Image (cartoon, rainbow, N blue to C red; front, top):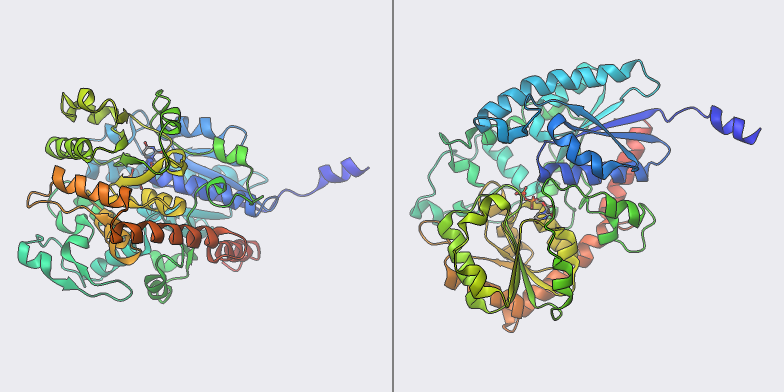
Amino acid sequence: MESEKKERVAPPPHHVLVLPFPVQGHINPMLQFAKRLASTASGIFRVTLATTVFFSETVQVKLTGGSVRLDTISDGYDRGGFMEAATPEAYHRRLDEVGSRTLVKLIERHKGSDRPFTCLIYDTSMHWALDVAAGLGLTGVAFYTQSCAAFAIYYYAYQGRLRLAVEPSEEGGRRTLSFPGLPPLSVSDLPSLLFEEGSSYEPVLSLKTKQFSNLDKADSVLFNTTQELESEVVSVLKGFWPVKTIGPTLPFMYLDETSSGTSREEDKDYGYNYYKPSSTNYIAWLDSKPEGSVAYVSFGSIAATSERQMAELAWGLRDSGVYFIWVVRASEQQKLPKEFAAETEERGLVVTWCNQLQVLAHGATGCFVTHCGWNSVLEALSLGVPMVGVPQWTDQPTNAKYVEDVWGVGVRAKADQEGVVRREEMETCVRQVLEGTSRRGEEIRSNARKWREMVKGAVREGGSSDKNMQEFVGELVNSDL
Ligand code: UDP
């Protein structure tokens, strides 16, 4: 009788579709978010993650047996993804067109099932998805995978309050700009895309500003950040949209050891990596190093470093005399100076890809030389690892500004007139942050510990992000959205 009753229980009425922009730095946080949503509202929601045909194969492996299902749309480049497109512009044009068409198909295919989609949580990089949701009667929720500060700056640009396409001339570079909710910014702290008009980045910038064109229609706007990290700008943004900070969406095992929210096994199984981690046993290598003695160096999944910059980084690391583990993707390896491996084999390890969270969480890791991609910054903040910022493009200069001046958890390496960070600068920054013998170094390390507790507190039960997540789920359940 009992089991018969159970079988007749109605299926959960809510089916949420999560749609990330198809690149590593967007899929990962939205996948983690999807997983958290499924566990927070377990039994109430079904959660499906949609990605492109091309990416679905690599994601699929990680989803086997998990609580999040997988479905696909097409970006029009099923065999090679964005790498197959002739230009970023061509990619975005095709994604807009084929993506929206196949998203409609996906939602309609489920309409006749016992679990039709009721809500679409879309990456704001695909603003057209909100129109699809509205057209098909779904709740539309925007998800922004970068900082509130970057979002606000793009919004001011969209409003015309920031002049686009101004070269950051020497004079202009020294000018301080004031915007509501943001610290005083110099031109070099702004996202680089604002200066790239006419270049191949223009479509990326237009994507960043187009996201505002229909955002007023979103039922909620979620950010992968915490209230504490960006309190002033969060307050400003709340005046425009129904904003909720719910981050960081890292696996719970790295944030809250006491959590029963998601199982550790599922966490382990669930990260998303487009690149295959190196077969080198870098964890064993880290195990053999003293506490806090290693500089971890990585510039993320997209940034291509110039050959000159690569050489300066390489020699700076060598000259610093510290242990280092450096992620150089296979496509970048030929830029390493020829003699580098031989000259540094005692102290350094170069890998093509790693499990970054595992490396940052390792006791031997004492500092993170980073391009300041938002995920990397959030990961380092959550694990209390001080940073040396070497920003490359997009929002990274703004993130580096916050790392150095707002949170005081690192330094931004100064670039020369050609935009290259020289070896001497690299050496000084790494030693200052890693060795921490100066007053500044001590402060940085103490701030990193302070922010780690603050960020972890936000996702623990009753913390700001946890409360926002519960509130969001409540609104969805009660269909207030
Ligand atoms: N990452 C990783 N292994 C690596 C390098 C990076 O797992 O060897 C992950 C990192 O943990 C982060 C993401 O890739 O989650 C990079 O995102 P981020 O926003 O920092 O930079 P992007 O790749 O978007 O420039």
